[in-house]
Length: 315
Ligand code: UDP
Ligand code: MG
Image (cartoon, rainbow, N blue to C red; front, side, top):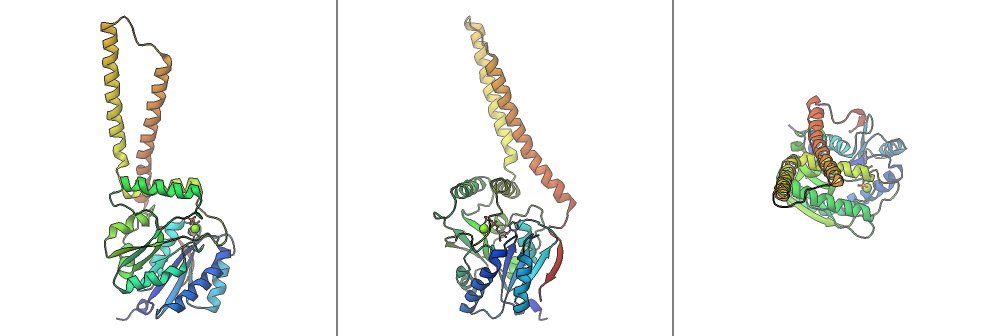
């Protein structure tokens, strides 16, 4: 049976949240690139993730002129990862590329991704090589994030990989089985297997608008990333507990020694308060870690959909 998706060779999935100034430049750069490669049929799938600006009407204007522009409008903001999942679930291409709407992921890399796919790779991911244009804080936090996740995650995530990659139809279909809440594609994709290859690139500056990832959002993203690809943080409490129990035991021995063999005794209100606060802080952190996992279980157990759609035009 011939299915419709067989006709489309390449889909470009673009999660979009308040990117009104970027839609048209994005479309223009993408079409230029598409004309350069030998792709039989392609589509651009914009996923409007609850934009409050003119993003959606800009997309609809493009669609009126070019039916290869398609869109899914989510009922509200569901977050980048869920918007991306919505796009992947609805893209019809034999190969699907996901990229940001702000042109930080250069469309000019598409021919390279496409060529690699043609030679048989099923996942062609990109590796961001940072340069001076990336703000210091972002660079530093992203470095720290990859270090930490790689230490903790069972499947290491390569530094600088983002949601700019090509996936073969087989991989996209496999991903449909992943309906977990707190989706973290960067952690899932390396664990899928298939024939993978990484391509380095230099990111561009945002063309227009502002990043939606504030520092606190990035911290949240990092915590989600770590706790969704690994259960190792749960072991922390045992090791820190053991460490402090040992410390307390040694200190006890020392106190006994002082009392038995010297005329001194241990005094000190400050040290008691300091250690109570210290241990109390550590306990709270450990409870917090437990809480994160428990919260995830709670949300997952409700099995709610990852996104809701108001309208879609995908023909
Ligand atoms: N995005 C989205 N939903 C959100 C936040 C962001 O769909 O809630 C989109 C955004 O429009 C962009 C991509 O996800 O296309 C990456 O976002 P951003 O550029 O703000 O992240 P950064 O590049 O700074 O990490
Ligand atoms: Mg960006």
